[in-house]
Image: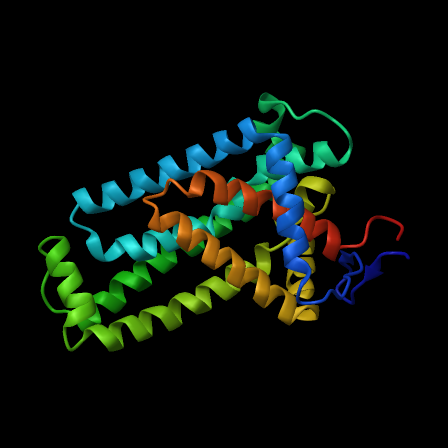
Length: 261
């Protein structure tokens, strides 16, 4: 099957329609990849977990407790970008090659300009989300936070807590849907093909639009797995994040038809 070309002139590859149960297969394939190259996956997972812990401690020590939850959420937003090396591991294994750490760490060089542009866009979204989250907190609470207990009391036990959490969750969901739609397969595509960032993002959005139930299940699985990793004080992320990264590569391979097919 030839590539489908949209009216704007972008070379968009064909997108497959998949059942809602398909993410289970992606996770299974991701787990196999993690078992075949465990030390690389654990290295990445450890780096991710350490970055998350440093972020949390930094916000806490800087009296930015209201930013901790959106900061952790924002850290997840950058996950697709940070996982470029994990996609490379899965690609190597797919080709029967033995992945090596140095080439994996340099995987972004396969398409540096386009991956860099998308990275800058994701960082801009993250900064915007943090500013919006801070604004939402300021709208509902008039005084500064004085420690963890005060943060918990104001956010969860005060009269403003429920509307604050409701608005914050809804706004966060908008950011999450936006980022998920444009990154669910775009970064693996930029690694795998000499595509430009606009083509990759449009392909990702089309994949999400053609498979709404499948993408909803996949997003829910990512959310549950990431939340489980966070609740273990980031230790669980050492396994969870490389698992999701490897599975994302297989999601891309499953959703996007190969060249010439």
